[in-house]
Length: 598
Image 1: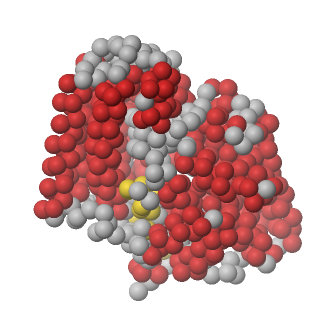
Image 2 (image 1 turned 30 degrees about the horizontal axis):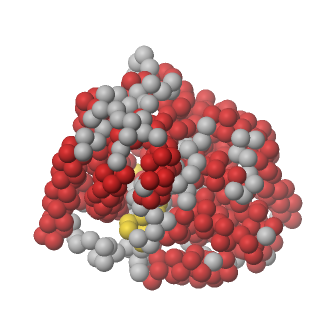
């Protein structure tokens, strides 16, 4: 057996029965029935049916308590089914149940919309003064007051919630199912082999440049073959979003996402100004990496090429041991979370046919999460695992929060994961020999380049697609052209232009969500915010942990700016973002010096 075949798989038996078990069918039916009961309760109290200036505290508390109980139970089933289909998109039973659940999820979404409308014109501070439950959910109430200003009529919102099921939700599912089941034919060791797309994309880290190039070319051919349905999905989703944000009174899809991500335009502009200023530094790194590889200029397939030597083994057991050691030195809560994840099989580690690419962490209930990855026995594989365990740690800090209190905006969702990734990377660097230090710095810069430079390109691309999608659909060729132009703006002469990845719009699932447009700049926010917090940890480690875990527990209970100000951070100033990027520049300097030694 190869190492990939022996990597752990997650287990769900302690959370829910198997999808085809009659016990699961009973839980499913009970949840659907409970949502129906919640609809009746909302109708009884006229929740969201007409504007109201006052809500009796007891009435508010009864409605909120019922909503939170039902929503949490439905979320668990939805998260479970999404994990099942992500691990194997060919799981027909899970796919059927997930599809069957969608009307219930839509009904809950509409109920939350009605809840926001209900409190939209109420003096929420007065309500909070009279109700402990309202006081505990004051951030949600204040956000609801703004959200209520951007709602259509109740009938229109109800119709939109129903139509989304056969619109963006269906197109998103098409992208997930189609891309996870793609087989790519690539020549390896002199023979043609058919591999899952995730496995072929992992070849981007192969030490043999010819293998990387063949994988890139085979991948591109495969994306080209499915370009028509994926372009249809992209156009349909962006068209739906454009229509709904306009009908709800937002000036653009970007403005709507800024509100949902709990930041404002000055914060985004301050960050993007600092980001664009950093492009020449990242290109300096890319040129230095090219010299390391004996190349005049990097091609796209060289971006993830290994540099330096991995003298330390990073197989899964070694990665687990190192992560546990470093986490224990930081916080008992962090260490305990990781220990449970490994001991209780929260992790599905290896790539295989039908499994989606990349990595994610899904909160399930209480302190428990589940992690999907496509682990490779490299430093980067270990670092990615630490990143996802950081999400599980974040989830644990919010275990006592209600469903609404724990709804963290995307800008803050990467706070703990970036921090934990940096924690293990710095420890690995300190313990390494010079040749391996080069590999560790390279892994950090490779990731940072993706989160700053590549994500900026994705942001530029999505802006253009939303602009152009207004009057008409874009062809696959036009999407490819927009992607190349966006990459030229961000990567510049750091890469050979003729090798830009024209089909990155097909690769990234973040484009295919009607409810999460512009899921790109939050990653950059998360990286730089996480680095900024890590710098403060190094300055005063003794005081930091308790304050940090309190911040993590409240990421769904305040705006990003409010939480940042608690650490003396002003996210509306480009100076703060430059400070985070200075940490990246310092590592670029390290890379240049270490690569000279090489």
